[in-house]
Image (cartoon, rainbow, N blue to C red; front, side, top):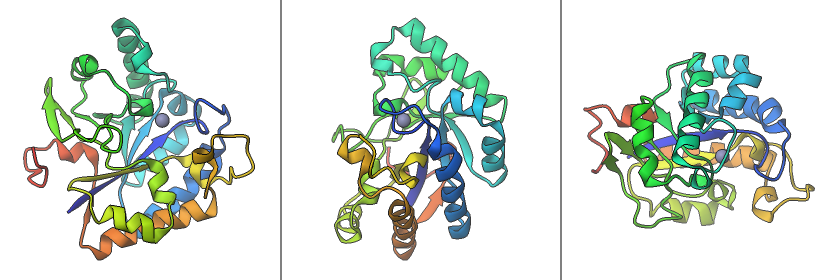
Length: 240
Ligand SMILES: [Zn+2]
């Protein structure tokens, strides 16, 4: 069993907030937990984060994590023309690749028109994780326009569920398992005027949930990989 632990590195709870507490306070704590557990992660990062926090990004890459792309400013690709999407991906790629090589991509809101996958190939992307099995139950690992599409397995909220409920769901997931979370979940947002699923069980509890989730998969003998390696020819664990 292979688990890809991924993080969508962006401003706080878009599009509802435009603060950066998750990057400034949540991200360092998450990186500490990943380091303690020896788990490498793929960090789908916006171009805006790369421009604002280049040192944080460099530090994460130096720690062995993969830098991926999460759009330039967390826009909705489904509302962009193809030319606008192309420009957005170009801007994000330039900002991110100034810091590290980038070949993996995830669209904000897990919403990316399939007609735009060719843009990813044109911009040098090998892996796309813009689909979610919890949103499109038919989504499977497949290749399109030369890009390997590896859907997320569950919503980020799942990691914050009470562990008995969460582990029961995890037990039914198909390999490869793609988990994701956001830095702002590790800041206490419970008293914010926000949609309930952005607020509940955030802060310390969310951080503890990440650790117990990692330990759950370790107990099941899982190995943790980087998304860029899923496109490597010897990645036999993927069911195409
Ligand atoms: Zn996002």
